[in-house]
Length: 462
Image (cartoon, rainbow, N blue to C red; front, side, top):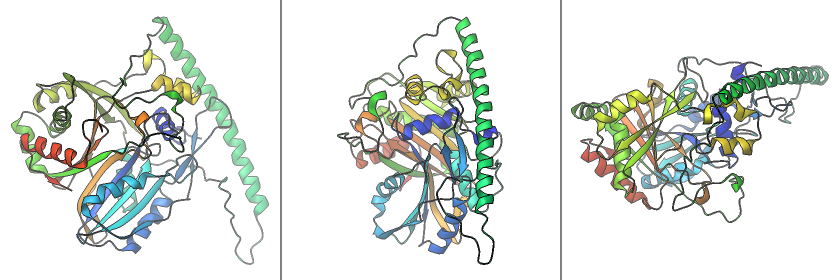
């Protein structure tokens, strides 16, 4: 079993959040079309996705200390059509509901759904567990399904434990014994691979821990998720699903579009870049909402993939933003930050998180990457996403949503922004996790509109 078939440290962090050890996160791509999308077209896309890189699930190792692995999983939720039409002002509320019951471990971990809009168009949503993919990976998976360039992939073992029966064709001999023997052979090889992976993991952990301790006993990690008015999550919170008495904490979202030429012109006029203007916009929205601190800590995801593949291939860095900072000063701070990455607590090897029990791993990594704001620049989207077959897209957005989020699981992060460019348009999705200061969709829309206008950005809100 190759390294690509094992879960990474980041994969397992997001797997734990799925179980309620942290903030639940799903990734979502949204397409708005000017007309009604052909159902048969979406069925074909659904079929390709089902056997594509999102069609996999997590398998527990047979040997303690080995990493979990991926196995191909062709089971999928059926393509979902919403009855009737929905109002355009309810579009994002509908989209928020598409993340329910995703399960990267027992499957399915993704969902394709669509609804007709009252403006004559359609909205299409592809949602997947963050354990399966990061934002860029979701884009690559869709590009692959729509006929884009081939991805860099490794064969994932077929799911032999799904309980689905394979019937022989009429007149063919029953090959159940051969299938059983092949399955047993795969299980034997997997067990041997697990022993090998266990030795590898413990070797890395022991050597890394020894070198870390030579520099002295690591200090207790600084608390990265300070108490909020709404409360904080605890390792004892348990799973999100079915927790009794937990108060729901629905998030609020807004999506805005801006001509790329105007966005880049405004950035240049302020001595910044398109990216630093994006960070400035999210920071100034937070300040305008009534954020009390003098500085804002911003978390910046960094795409670390060296070739196109569907995975969680990212690292995190951070900057501190002063109230007086501009797109120009943020540009310099971000340039320096991108040259370094957030490291594991106390310099301990990050593989430690994969060989200890999940609750211990959660306690050690709790709040990792969480800051006051998250600014994720997904980059330029492939041209294949500009349309769905003959249906022209009037808007394409990518973002994270938080299905099942409750008040006791609210993270430190108050605003999350997800920027992408497609053709000659920048699209920014903003998600608020701060019900104390941003209590209604109208408040968030007003914040976005007024802050963008102050920065010289002519925007259109979805």
